[in-house]
Length: 435
Ligand code: URA
Image (cartoon, rainbow, N blue to C red):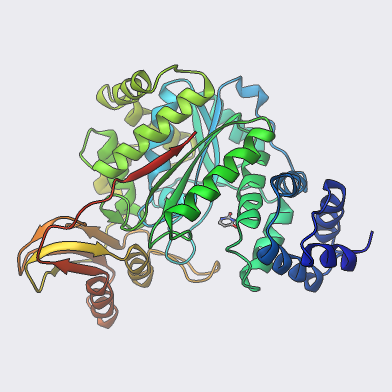
């Protein structure tokens, strides 16, 4: 087989066979197919697309390019959840302890944040002492004993994706459905869970900005996962504004804890109940959505989910007291209130702009090498649909210093808000469940 001929075939709209796709992924991972040929193939896929059979073959080849985690020791009920990334997304910290209390074991590998989106690992690392690095044996042991574990992705998992994603990033080939599906699903399949639920974001803070594109991506990922023999579910949710109120690592941990204590963060709680019931239904633990939701709610009401979070924090080397007393989390030096310059309603928010503002405070990183400040971030006081009076607080900025950087973040944050005279019509937060 010759790579140039396979590029030509895809360029001209042909369909690659599973054998050809295996040849490409094996060669690219081993270094016998160079970046320039792989770039050309990615661009051909970008314009020509892939059939479901091709996307499935690509996903499987990428999943098998490295270690396939074996979770059979954890029993029949293993789950995983993936979000396509957003601003203020602390879902895993709430969802994992809730479903773990219902008997679904979550052995979850997560990532650090990059750009305007946060990463679960950064949020966890704001808890004093907690480590997300561990060997495979300890990973399985915590998942088994506590019911969930949240760790960094193993370096030997889906190496083809690591290489390919870096290449796509610099060749303008990230936004291609078959390439996104294979990238995300190869890692999910390699992580080993039997039941996988996807939270596909849509809107200004998501990388799929239209609902149509988000549903297409969700359906394709569900189809590939089912062909690979996994129980799959997916929902499409709003990312036109940040999830919850807090954006920034320790602030998000505090918000996650508040939901597990019964606090009212409507969109975040609804997301956890919906994803959680999908996980319990798809895994066969529950038979109908209503009883699944009631069971999940009971884990909050009894305090069991909060205790489960504390158990995970302790097992991963962290200070479990921080779960019960969030004043032990890192705190920013300056707390500044951003006041509204007009009266009316908040008509829209730029989620991405708020993510970027938080990044400029130090809550996120522009390049993978940068370090972050766990204490800083933004807590929104007004979200879309809220009435606001001139001089009222729109958001609270938690910063490291009262300096020019704070002034510039203040301007960025103000620019992320739009106002109207009349109350805007709100779109539902959950846009739909993929059946
Ligand atoms: N996240 C991934 O892991 N891969 C993509 O291609 C896009 C988002």
